[in-house]
Image (cartoon, rainbow, N blue to C red):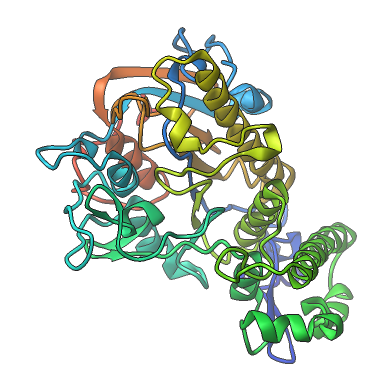
Length: 448
């Protein structure tokens, strides 16, 4: 037999005028001799942070196993039930005071992915521990252009103290490259887009707004390469490429619209950076669409995404709540405040569900991006009213053969969340022996 079909390299880029565009996995990237076999896709790891705990009885199922009920807060996750694993009993015990007094919101952020008790300081000498996402980035980043992305929806607080003697570094991020190196969170879709695809010599907001009207699409810069590549592709690949490029154009259009809105509004730059949409929902969708593109093109396999800062006091006027999130979590059993916190919880889960649907709808190898991802959704606090660091709201979406979904797994109180993180790392091919207060892999998952 003579094989004439040639394959494209998996890491294929299109270039033009200094712009580089990564491509998704196409059939033409499967080696010729394996054309009939499914392409093996890598495991992606996502860590999505829900701030300030939850109203637990609206989140936690009362029944364990495969027949667990979908609770009011997780209602938006019902379409993804087969990909959903809910965990109860998880804790980050090092988020407790341990003699340091107040500061539970700083500790909720600092411990969520590290399991390490942070040093109480407002200035020099901050210290926590390397986070799970960065352990993954060290290994999985060897195969990608970007080791990881750290993204969010709420701008960082100013330097100094943010919570009872704790530095703002502890509330602004959940990602730590090392014990003393917190990683900044990017909230600007334009900055994320340019990190992924380039385009432009300056990220200065004023300069970009001045040239906005004459700005060309990143796709225009590589149009020649796109045309040449298309002639080498089959019908299926041409359709995939067309869908991908149209999604990219749509993201660009939405970013440009946000920039135009920003240009017309007289607001301090610190409060409204250029290209951050005024509408929270549109901002969230843009940031999630960029994450899907980053996974789809294998630009990175590790992303953290903060729906809000640790201890966030953002109001949610778009759903009729003008009081700050953190403020009303201290509800003191006021039924109106409890209902409003639960409403915020459900809204954030619905926001997350958009991300899941985009992952599910994006083909990847022999399945979808959701099939080939493990996405942790959770918080570093349990009951924010009394600042508990046990019964942390925790779920993992995805799986792709890594473990069986469609279950509620109930563990003993104070089971280290780090056991789950270690298990996720191992499933993604990242080995670690010592991590935070982990005692090993989480049982009931390792045999699946």
